[in-house]
Length: 112
Length: 112
Image 1 (tube, rainbow over the protein chains, first blue to last red):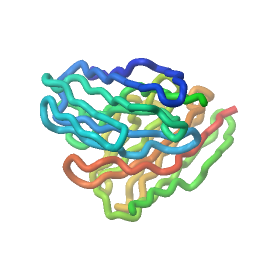
Image 2: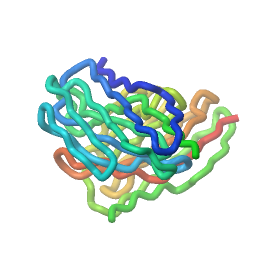
Image 3: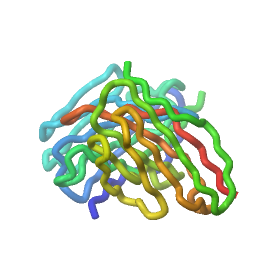
């Protein structure tokens, strides 16, 4: 079946360092969404990418959607302690309409 | 703001018990979902519903059933709880098209 993988599974960084998580799908995605889950919280929607090669920015966060629409990345510049959490990508199943398949997530820890 | 409310934050049940997890959303969303979240596995879709009385199996429906008698309420049922169903259960709702998921706070279920 369709799979969405993320790497790395865990990442520890010092505050101020950059961070990147990568998302790879076994099939082409019509769009990709990114969510953030704070420790003890629930996933919260960050952004959606639709177009091939699309790049979107939210302050220190940069999101990219690959040309083949099978991969995506989230890059955080100069991490802060508020960035701590687990980041998930999610894409719709092929022909699945409203169903989203989530990636395995990347847990980010930021140390002072 | 969309509000998705799960009836219990923590639940402890015994093996073999019938367990009901309730979820209510207040935004008149057509689509509702039940995911379970386990470390290293991300969020896996159990069941979803795109309309009242309509349901579809997700990736891991075995051992679960669902009920959607009213648009705002989506219930997850464990017919006979087993220890491998100990997990965090997340309910979500979404509107039509590529709109994002809105999650509840989750129910951490422990089956002993």
